[in-house]
Length: 540
Image (cartoon, rainbow, N blue to C red; front, side):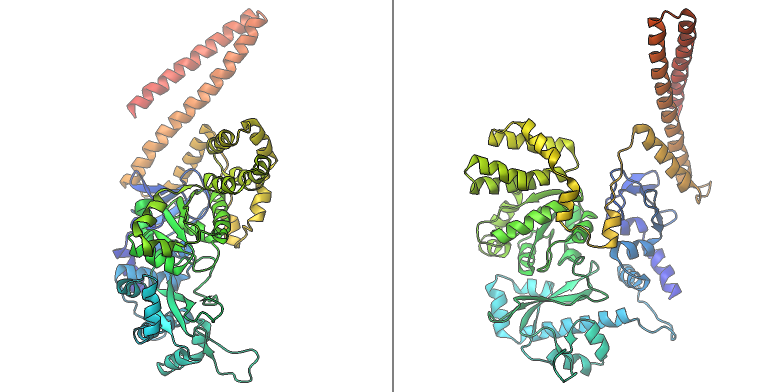
């Protein structure tokens, strides 16, 4: 396996892999970006193609291509190895003393189950008819590997056992379970008489399933796989493996709720769409999307439940610093119904999406005609959303909008806004999805220009530690270091000059001639030093 690891490193470039998750900017012979592992406003995450490694000066994350994939995808080494091997076109060769891990076995049984469901769908006209009635094409069925789970108790389980898969692995994959009440310990299928949507990780490997009941009498209507060592509901987004490239290209994500919404959106050509697979969008979902783009459009069902879900998702997005817009779907319709009847209408709805604050204000204004009650609703629902916005300029924009459209003075909104506590609003959203979420939610403090320069100088010092003197990257960093030192010296001289000028003003007021003379000489000296720095800067 060691040879496989080296081959993968030779074939893949870390900058190309990392750029699939975050936007990189050239920085000499390296690249920089905002760190995907903690929230920050200024880039402190650096990738070195020379050393094939990364380092974050903000949170200390560092490593090679395998470490990055483990962190960004939440994988262990074997999982990262599998993912990168597929990207590199390398077939992993296990030594005789290396047995496949439990994860490998679960991946294999899930792939076998997917093939079983696909075959069952081709033989079931009722299931095919339902899918066709929703407007899903044969090409989409094949692209998304849709299937059908027979209305039998053990058809999948028996099939998998006949194909050599262990009982324990089938259970751990979430494909079968044993009844707590029945005396029989024979496992039975989790999915029965359901349209099957396979859920994939970002690499396209099947990790779980979501099943839509074919019969109207079957409950629940939607059923997801239980959580396993491969599948965590709060993190997995349906369609992300196929949408991520388009999300990066278009620089925004469209969020829908259901699998059919997702499939039809892609079928209509809107391929930067992802879905939550019937579960509520969580902070972890949005943190994952933020790695690809900081802009999202929420397109949930056009009913009250969809509006409520969109409101919470919007506030979660705003907390994370995302630019959030909301699509206004026709009353009572979901995205799938819009696409089926008029694909162009779906694209128009997406294009006409409004900033979240404006969208939800419009909804309140439509329902509430009493001006006093309107003000109460703004105080309850809109101001908490504005409070979560980090930019004061954006806050001012929305306060001004509210004032113009309600006739209420801006000062009143600002006073009420001060009473809204950001912490209280965040607690209402139940932001503690995971230990990792809480640690990554720390906001970077605002830094002065001098602090920023000193921080960058510290970064350069750390970055240079492992760099051989001969390579060009080191020369680039040395030049940047010289420029920064020049700027830092200039700032320090300006601070000194400002202090001396203040002392001179006080000396002139007290008519202290000797002190005036000394301060004047010192000020002239500072000006001389500043001119020398300017000359030095031109020479760099």
